[in-house]
Image (cartoon, rainbow, N blue to C red):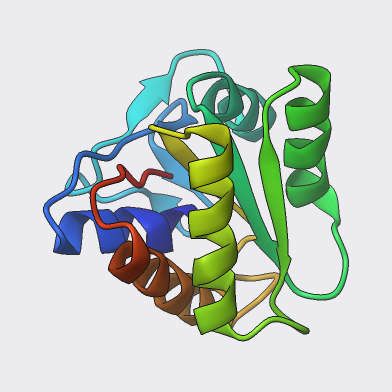
Length: 149
């Protein structure tokens, strides 16, 4: 989901960023240089997730049916750090409605830097497209807000 968020932000020439594991690694290998993410030296996926929650004003967690693994960990970090978060279950929420939920949450919590989280592409093949559509819908509703991964 973070890659979809970065792609939407880059498409709209919005400021974006975030953290990635040491070596710019993701599940497919090295993250391409076009993505403006910073390496978290001596940090892996869990540390990256924590740092992205810390450095944002709020998090949107997009998932399908149930929270597991790193996606569930993101929610735990939000709770531990008392950071606002919005859960969006793509199995029950159309992408347009998800965009409205994100916009409502951003307004309610005055989010300037939004963290977008969700399952890896290998765990949810349709997640990238859903997230991309939801964030496009969000931007149509409040295009002045930064979007990041």
